[in-house]
Length: 137
Image (tube, rainbow, N blue to C red; front, side, top):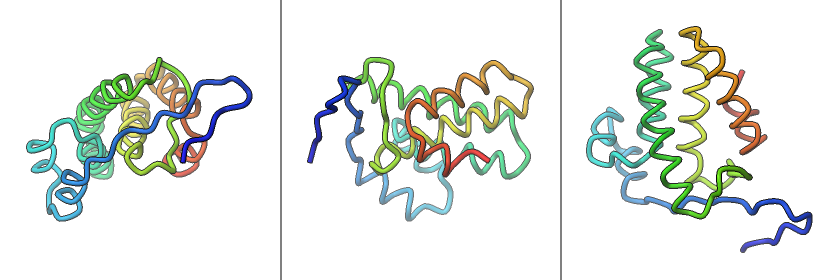
């Protein structure tokens, strides 16, 4: 069900589901195989970035997160996003993009790219307070 924003702000953007890619990621031992087969699937890139961060590889994480972030921006634009407005965490297909954005913020911070880290943190906060609570320390 869709709700109209009575305050006149931008509507929520909800990315379409990719059930085939999601199932592949759930079954995969390595998200790299999913990213190679479904290169537009943000959650695979986010998983790769998160794994690299967990392994102390911030430059690799930055590259993976940036790929997921840019794939997500393309999808958001196709879904009607105008460069601002809510991208709710509660809508599962949005989570891959939001995870990639959070990983990009964390990786940028880890490599001393402070302006990029701040920009990504603000973008995440503008998109979804629930994602900030879930993804950023």
